[in-house]
Length: 91
Image 1 (cartoon, rainbow, N blue to C red):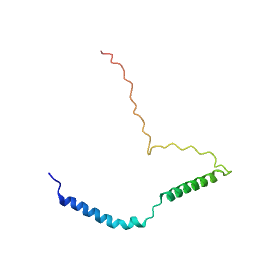
Image 2 (cartoon, helix red, strand yellow):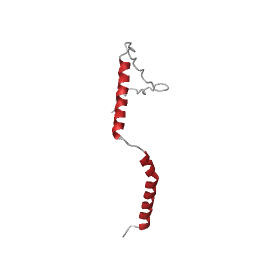
Image 3 (tube, rainbow, N blue to C red):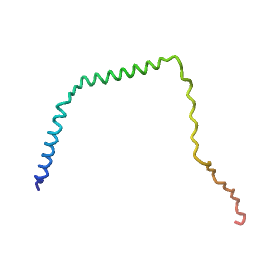
Image 4 (tube, rainbow, N blue to C red):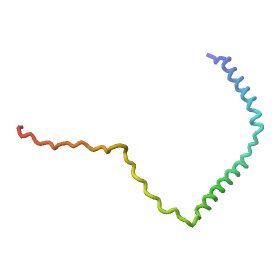
C-alpha cells in the first residue's frame, strides 16, 4: 500500500511556505558564536568579581538563628489510652 500523495504534498507545501516566511528572519540575524562566548564569560567574571567585592566586607552579619520547629495547626493529637488487660481466671 502506497502513502497518499495528497498528504505528502500538503506537508511539502507547508514546509516551503514556512521556509519562505522565516528566511528573512535568519538572514537578518548575525550569529557570531565566538562573540557570544566572550560576552558570556565576561558576564560571569563580572558577576564573580561583584560577589567577591561584597565578601571582603569587614562587618559580619552575626550568627544565624536556628529555625523554629513547625507546629501542626490546631490542638495536638493525643494517643488513645488503652486500659490494661487482666487475665481471665475462669479458664
